[in-house]
Length: 244
Image 1 (cartoon, one colour):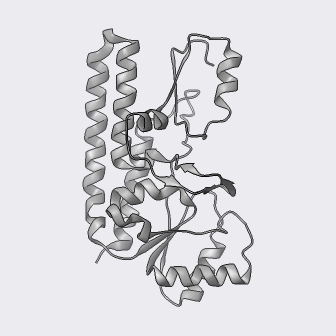
Image 2 (cartoon, one colour; image 1 turned 180 degrees about the vertical axis):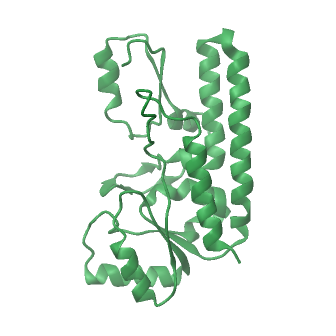
Image 3 (tube, one colour; image 1 turned 30 degrees about the horizontal axis):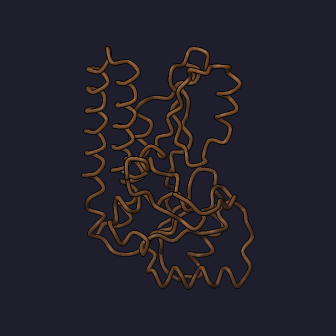
């Protein structure tokens, strides 16, 4: 699969443990690997440092939160990094690369306009795991940490009575207005939370956009619209929950 490639684009920060064995297995010493999140950090972009994070039931150690693509500002910076690298590799195509960059950034600005009204809202969002910090920072601003609450138990883990009681207390303290599950998670605990909180809280599904639906007619191909479609859907769901 890598034999005809000049560049492999990855997120980095530990998300693609499978990648380097594949690169080494290709025998391509000239194959360049661009880890976009790590490149952002080299350029001085402020990544979100975490003591540890949960990812589909697995707890990862401290370091930078890798889910940078969910931040609207970070997504523009990622697009710029990719464009710069492509222009370096194929300078004869610089014009088309920069044109595409402009188109991507314009679509991201439209998403930002959709997200902006959320900054004026109140109340926290309880999420399936810790994937949504960058999105939270984009939509809630500098106090995003006070408005996000990661909920354990959405991937089948059992919570003790004491853990569940602590979770209910945290939801009340942060004035949670919505409970966000994600594709593939179990919503049972969310219904328990609804009952325990005694309030009508919305349960919505937010997509962390970690996977995509491939085009059935093209192998290893995903529509360029996938990210924008999923992100717009996420934002519209949040606007519906937080509308006055």
